Image (cartoon, one colour):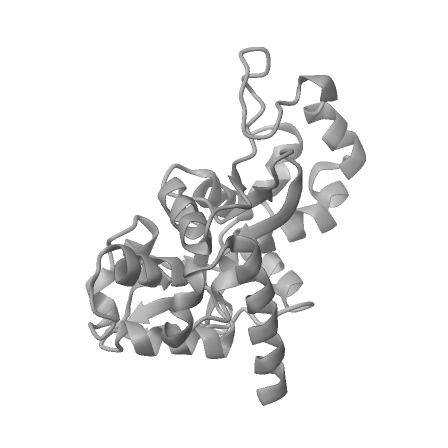
Length: 259
């Protein structure tokens, strides 16, 4: 490793954890392996999480809201089975390793950008406490510390990658002229919430752009939009995606009032 990227092999994950403390608590209490899907979904909603580690004698995997809803909705299975039963359905849910906080962020970047679709990682901090870091946490840390990490202003770095904006692809399309530019995955605003989240799950992505008939982006949808749901609210996924967003905001407002 040479040049600016060498600093990535010197900065530890502990620095990312310290950065996260500025805006959220990364410490996460694992859920017991024999909790039902119903109970686990309720825990995720209460703690405002999109995923949680599962523990037997030790951590045996991570499950997300998407994993649970996929099992209940698309497999026509009961929500009364133990959470352990869906571990391994996805590559990420079968993950049972924990990174040490003194590991370099280069390793974390490799994990998040690899082919196994990892959106989050479990970290044991200096005190031995389990934390969970998201892709967005790492991106936020890199953005804030870009000059220190790469000795390069963020704006200059952006120009290095987007040399010719005219070569960028139209939304949802790819061209041979711009093979290095990844397409933006989109979903029409005529789809239901269920169709939208199923598409995200099958494509192994954490977010997607919602577009109108003119291919204009009108919303963005991510797995965090599922945080307000519990099993009793699953029927809302049959609604149009835009209606779902309105109902979600209403549920979130009611939840704040209950708090």
